[in-house]
Length: 495
Ligand SMILES: Cc1cc2nc3c(=O)[nH]c(=O)nc-3n(C[C@H](O)[C@H](O)[C@H](O)COP(=O)(O)OP(=O)(O)OC[C@H]3O[C@@H](n4cnc5c(N)ncnc54)[C@H](O)[C@@H]3O)c2cc1C
Image (cartoon, rainbow, N blue to C red; front, side, top):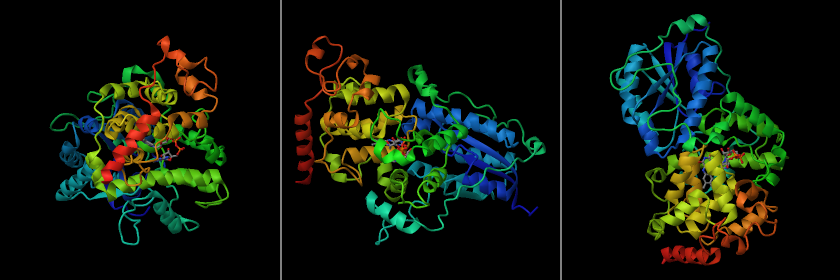
C-alpha cells in the first residue's frame, strides 16, 4: 500500500452530508491512515442567518443517517454543539490536539460569514502545525473562476451560462463523481475514543440530538415536514425516479399540480446528494451534452446552472451577504409598513387563491414549487410593496431546502433589486399565472379547501358572493392598481 501523507485526519462536514462523491472525505481517505468525521452545530449563528426549524431538522436527521452509514465503514462521526462560529477555531484546535489530528479537510462554503470562519480556522490550525484543505464541492467549478472578458464576476445569468457551457460542453468534463471511502476495518473504529471532554460549553460526543439550541423539531409539530425521507439513499432513489421523467421536464416543470420537477433541492442543500451526480444523470440522458437532444435534460441542466450562478454571485458580490440589495438605488424604495398585509401573506389568507395555496404549501410541507415562489415573491414585493427581506427571511424560516444563495438570488430577482433581476415593469399577474399554470384549479383545491366547490373557471378569482359568508377572505389588494403603483415607485427611483 502506498505511504500516506498523514497518520490521522479529520473531515469537518457542514452542508455536504454524504459519503458518496464527497471531495473532502475522498481526499482525506486518500491522504490519511486513520480518519474521523466531525459536525459542529452553531445554533446561535444559524438563527442569526435566518435558518429555521425545518432546514435544521433536515440537517440533523440527515446527519443521523450518515452516522449510521459511516459506522458500517468503521469511520466515527463526532458531534459538537457550540453557540456560534466565533467558538469554532478554538474548539477545533483543542480537538486536533486531543485526537492527534495531523490534517483537516472540509468542503468550501461561500457566504461571507462562512468564509471568515474558515479563514480563522485555517489560521488557528496553521499556528499549531495542522494544515487545512478546503475543497471545491458545493459548486461544479470554484466561484470566481469564471469571469467576463474584463475579469469580473458575471452579473447576468445568460452570459454566465453561455460561458460555462462554452468552456465545459463536449469536453472531458472533470465533473465525474468520486467514490465513497472504503471500509477501514473494525480495528480502525477502536482507535477513536467514544467522547472527549473539551474546555468550555460542550464535549465532543457521538450522540446526535433531535434538536439544538432553541430549535424545535418542526414548527407547530407539523408532521408533513418530517415526511421528507432523509439520507443519501433517499436522494439517490429520487434522482433515479426523476431520470425517468427528465425528458418531459421542460413541458411539465411549471405546473404545480404535476410532479414535473425533481424535488431534489432539500438534498442538494444539506448535501445528501452532490450536484455532480445530478449533472452525470442529466448528461447521460442528453448525449453527454449540456445542450443536447433532450430538451428536458438540457432545461434541467440550465436550472442546475442557476444554482451555480447564485453560489458564484455571493463570492463575486459579497454585498448581497450584508442584507443589502445589489442595486443600491433600490434601498430608497418606500416599502409598505402594513404588517397586516405581510401577516396575511404568511398565513395564506390574502384572498388571492394561487398565492394562498402556495403559501399554505410552504407552511404545511416546507417546500414550494418554483413557479409559485416567483408568483408569491412578486405579489409580496410588488402588489403589497413589502420589503423583499421580510419575504426572504420568512422563506428561510419555513423552507426545508433553505439556502442563502438561491433564496437571496430568487428574492432579489423577484423584487427587481438584484444583479440578474426581473425588470421592474414586469410584474406577475397572479390571476393569469393561476389560469395558465393551474388551469383546472387542482393545486388550489389541494391547499385551499374553502374553494373546493368552485369551477375551474371561477376558482382563480372567486366571485364576490363567496366573501359574504367569510369562509374565504376578500383580496388584500386590487392587483391592477397595486401593480401600477409599484411600477411608478420603481420608475421614480431612476429620476
Ligand atoms: C423567491 C425564491 C426563493 C427561492 N429559494 C430557494 C432556496 O432557499 N433554496 C433553493 O434550493 N432554491 C430556492 N429557489 C429556487 C427554486 O425555486 C428551487 O430550487 C426549486 O423550486 C426546487 O425544486 P426542485 O428541486 O424540484 O427543482 P428542479 O426544477 O428539479 O431543479 C433542480 C435543481 O436546480 C436548482 N434550481 C432550480 N431552479 C433554481 C433557481 N431558480 N435558483 C437556484 N437554483 C435553482 C435547485 O438546486 C433544484 O433542486 C428559490 C426561488 C425563488 C424564486
